[in-house]
Length: 222
Image (cartoon, rainbow, N blue to C red; front, side, top):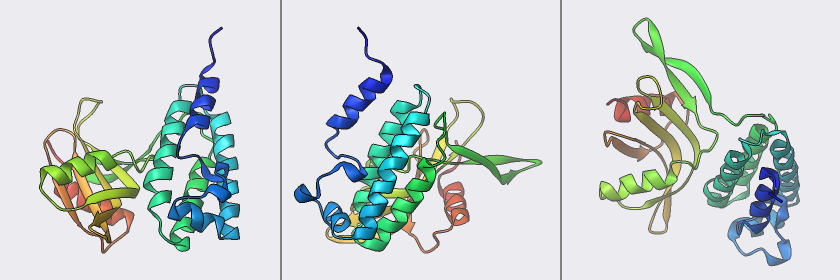
């Protein structure tokens, strides 16, 4: 008898080594992030709230969207939550993630807004739900450009598609954490899929418009 997609996902979730919010045992907390959460009642409460929001989001998602939501949550654990080193960062990360999950979307999709003027029309800016989706790609660009450090995670990610359809180039920009040696730095970074555009700089403007303009000027085209 074949398992349903939900049962398969449930098995994957149970087997996930990283675990999800309220599912880990504080007596066995090993990472600095887990220890910080377990030591703070407010964070522990947020932890429980996120776990419930995730369960409800998974229940609301269509079968075709459940794997996407699972990957998205694993990326959030690794590339957003686990990058935080103090309580304020974790509080902000949890509240933002709970807000996303609480929308209980049937189909998991990124939001697109027409923001950049292009003659009489405009170009879309897509806000990615999975902010960790480009971490590996950004790190490959760092290595290829022989720049030091590595991206630990990103808490905002956008896509500026060029042209129409899925065959066009896509330029991605993010607010991310760069680690070089023992030092960490907040940066904005961008690259694309086809041409090889790449740029990185310290982030002095954390606004959505600042990231959009940086990505558009440094990595769009082709």
